Image (cartoon, rainbow, N blue to C red; front, side):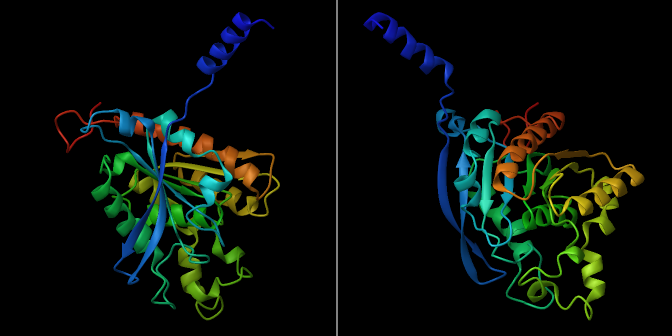
Length: 289
């Protein structure tokens, strides 16, 4: 290959290949509820640095699963490029190894629902150029994080306009054998009332009442698929609008890394339908359409 052809080939590849220029940061977010601070990963789209200082962005919160931490999503998926593609800020807080993102009735030191649903949101809105409205916030997660995302969205209908779950453990009553779960939920026999009240299927009507854009995704080979199907059927029975997807795959990062692309696309559509733009012009209190 002569030098001229080589030059044009390289130039063509450079033009054709997307240049992902997102920024990934680790921040430390204090929790007054737990008297402790935790790290979180924040991914900012390229437009955040390249745009003008008045530009503001929707935020998608991504929760990790059992045994994971704030680094899981960036370590195991190409999540960063989605920030550039959809002009959104991505926030991945630390939810503890087995917190289930609830305010535990048996462990007063485990208040991860308050932390993620209130304190992390407040910190992100205070330190980054966000569109600080319900319509410009979405939350999703995998496995334990899928339960956490739906649970937090249901309990805070004024905070999140969209919610999702990927391979979500949507019914903790089916996860009684999970190590550490009793330390936050209590004994499944003695505290059965609490376990029942926390099941997402028992609270499905809340999604319709809160007008939350909802998407649920689970692999057909996942051990949690039956509980996800039950939730889907309950939502259909109640007439609650939602997207439900099953694809080949199991409880693996290969599945989650693929599924999150569809969830972020869903949230981007929800932002557009809510007339949320990735900037504010001269009015920082309302989203431009």
